[in-house]
Image 1 (cartoon, rainbow, N blue to C red):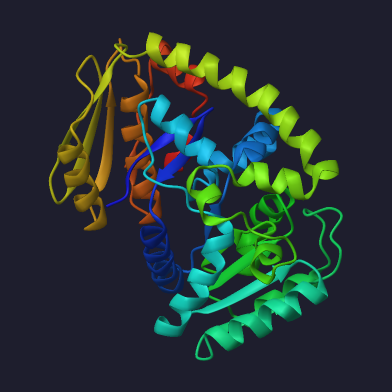
Image 2 (tube, helix red, strand yellow; image 1 turned 120 degrees about the vertical axis):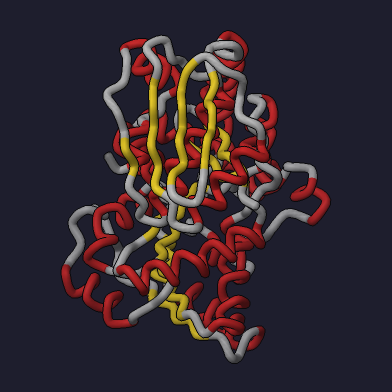
Length: 356
């Protein structure tokens, strides 16, 4: 079961395995087709989080994304250091072929938008050979300078495909801005930013050997492949990400005893009480998730002296995010000043995630 997310600089990172992610995409497709809703999935790595810290609109998009998966070993390591571990890296370059493979089983239609004509043609040929019964299409599309200002003919061509999953390969954060700006117009149940995944898939850019991937050194392999382009970027990312993580770790230790979340749930209502208490037990969290999946609504109560430890904030955000997946109502109260300051220190907006 998907656990509470890690919170890295205010961005929730899902505690999700590759299999759980693909299963969740299936669930999102079902909800989207039934209720006419759309779900955005992002694949943040270190560079993406650094950009989010410098560009408020990108940070807001990631805060409001329905699922952020850890596309990088340093993200996994950082989550463990903060005490809210995610179990594994879910690489965007591995997700696309897994979605096409699942399409062969479920009949879901996967459409990839972006990349170059040559890469798109090679990816189509490769996937057709591997998964002849899958339903997938590729469209490199035009060059998009401003993701918020796209010709309606381009959007209409995507709508006409009637895909269940749209993989947008424009590079981050352009692809996330594109999805956030046009998701309702496109009406595709699941929209995922996949960056340069097609380049990896087709061999345009080589993947690191398996041992380097397992050791979390794929970034080093990529930098060696493209030192002029990636070397300076990665060096700049390390200079920003390292000190920010160190500050976050110090702050997390200081917040350790700040406050917890008490969970009381039944099939009708999940009650989240924020205030002086221990951090929630995983069994209580999983029980609440089960009730949310069954249709329970959410009621949040905040005591006057409520604050948040990182573990408590993780549980809160995870449950609010889960409620939003199902379109469940959230009774969100006025909050005290201390709780508001605690959320600001964590870089989170629970009311925003709850859709209040």
